[in-house]
Length: 180
Ligand SMILES: [Cu+2]
Image 1 (cartoon, rainbow, N blue to C red):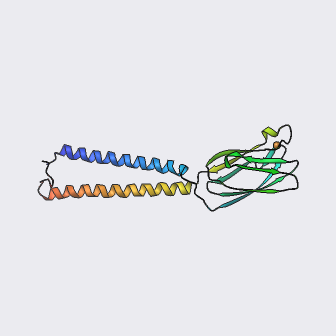
Image 2 (spheres, helix red, strand yellow; image 1 turned 30 degrees about the vertical axis):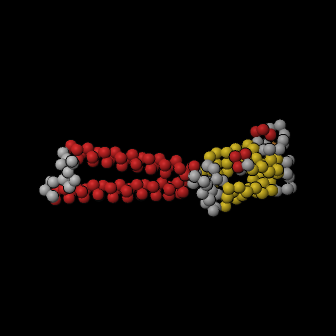
Image 3 (tube, helix red, strand yellow; image 1 turned 180 degrees about the vertical axis):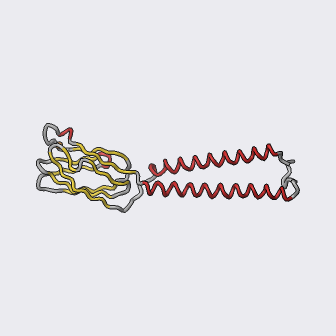
């Protein structure tokens, strides 16, 4: 027969294990999606980008991770480039010759795009910024699934614990599995 102190000890241990499990689960839920291979949202995002000495219009582009990005590039003056090293994307944009670039935004973060054709004295400062948001619906879905799974396991575990407690109470306090 377990003493009430032992029973309480087991309950505390069970709650500690459960909390550790939930913390671990949540951590994985938040950390994993960024590491997993890219989800493809299936969304196509198109932007008209104009290059001119010495900048891009728009200066910033914001998409969600997994989006297919289509850039229609046009120069308003001389030849420029559009270079986005993280995606291995580079194009020459000459006046009167619009060009199109396509890539899947499979990495979240902020990335610079810059001119890759010497176009004048301020060429090194011809920079824009691509923001790829981490795709929260996907992250939330993964997180929610893990939390629900952890909750179900916890519920079954606790219910099982309560039931064996009730059974031993029903047997007049005799322990079902007396310790040797
Ligand atoms: Cu340039």
